[in-house]
Each structure stands twice: as structure tokens, then as C-alpha cells.
Amino acid sequence: MRKTTTFAVTAGAALALVLTGCGSNTENGTASPAGQAQDQSAGGGGLAAPFGDVLKLADAAKQGTEKSKSAKMSMDMSVGGKSVTATGAMSFDGQSQKFTMTMNTPDGSTEMRYLDNTLYLKVPSGQAKQFGTDKPWLKIAADANDPISQSLSKSMQQASKQSDPTQILEQVAKAGRIVGSDQTRLDGQEVNHYRVELDVQKAIGQFTGDLPAEAKDQMTKMLAGKDIKLPAELWLDKDQLPLQVTMDESSLMQAMGASTQGPGKITVKYSDWGAPVDVAAPPADQVGDFSEIAKKMGGGR
Image (cartoon, rainbow, N blue to C red):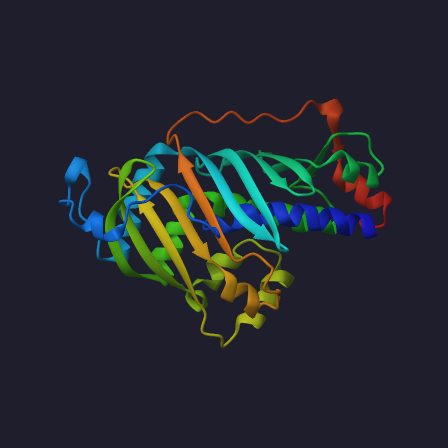
């Protein structure tokens, strides 16, 4: 049972990367000072003036991302006081979402592939041996019948949706407000920079989504009556495509009982919008079924 718990923690850290879909303790990329950017004419280089209405901002950005449907991404966050980075590529095509991602931590590298509602997880070899398998990959299928796989599968389905930046924009539209904006440059591109604030009470349904009922109820109870606002920032190019999104979830994590070393500021950067994303399942002879492993370890009851 201890081994299945170890796996759940490992997978949970991976899920956290995708679920957050925004933010970091450093601002990746080089942005010019806001004061300098304000001297630029609105619409310079094809860049329109920033939106003042959060609904119009979200609608314009959603139209851009829905047309492109895919992007490369990178993330930077902290899990349990340890620095975690990730790189990958994602396709946001309706119900057929898929992604490939490599997560790097001080404890090693974990590779993830998600397609056809199935997660393939390649954990460090030392951890794989703990599960009594010589297979380098572990599979968590949507139709698995053990509790741990079912929980992780539902969480991953929610994570896949949240990794789509249109979902972030939905949260902004329904539970956010623009608190400031300016025009600046990010990694050499002219961008509109928005500072927004999300009201957690208005967005609980979006944060919990397809999570298991027990986890959803627990989260809702823990946040009941708490006035939590999450600061976030968005950088959009002239085509209204997100190039960088950040969110500080420190207050949310603390409200849920996490230590100050838990996930706080997270950053996601997007690039190569519209580029093809190729995600294939690992060879069958290299894949172990986590559902079967969980049963052998007593975690399938």
C-alpha cells in the first residue's frame, strides 16, 4: 500500500503541473518596463489596444486559441519546496485532447503521454522497481477498476481540459476582472499585458470540474466562506494568442491546509501555435498496467 501511495504522490505532482495551467516564481522571458511600453502607440506592429472588459478579452483570446488548436509549452513551479520544470506540446482539439510532457525534478525525470483518455507515465527507474515491474512505462486507463487508477484518471481528464488555455480564459471570463493592463514586449514580441484577479468562490466549479465526488466535496467544504482572490497575469500577442500566463495560488493552497512550501506561483509559456502535435502510445511490450500492479499491492480493493 505504501508503494501505491508513493506512485499517487508522483503522479499527483505531475497532475499538478497540468492542472494549474498558469504562473511561476520568476517571470520567464524578458519584458520591457511598463512605462516604456506605454509610450508605444496602440496598434503598433498590428497590436490592438488592450481590452478593458474581461468578457471581451476572454472571447477574443478564445477565438485565437480555438483556431490554432495546438502549441508547445513550458512550465515552472514549486512542489513541496522543490523546483519543478516541464516542457511539452499539447493539442486542444475538442474531446481528442492529447499531450506529451517531460517533468524534471531534483529526484529525476518523469515523462508523460496522454491520448485516448489514457495516461502513460515513465517514472525514474528506481521508482518503477518499487512497483515490482521491469516495464519502463505505467498505464492509467480511463476504464480501470481500481480506486487509485480511477481517481488519477478522472483527475487527468480534468487536467487535460485545464491545460487548454481556453479553459483558463473561461475562468477569467466567469470569475475574474481586469485590474490593470499595458503594452510591452515579451521575448522580442509586442504584447498586451493584463493583470487579472480570480474570485475562487465564483470558480470552485471550474477548479473541481471532473474530480471525484469525495475530493470535490472536500475541496468545496475547505473553501466555504473564504474570500480568496488569485492574482494572475496574461501576455497576448497581436493574434490574441497567449504567450505567457502566470498565477499565484499561494492563498488557495494555504486555505486548503498546504504548507507555505507547496505550489504557489506557477508559470506556463506557449509557443509555436498551430504546429502539429504527434503523441503516440509507448510500445505495448514496454507498458505495465498500473491497475494490475495496484491489485497485487492491495490498492485495488
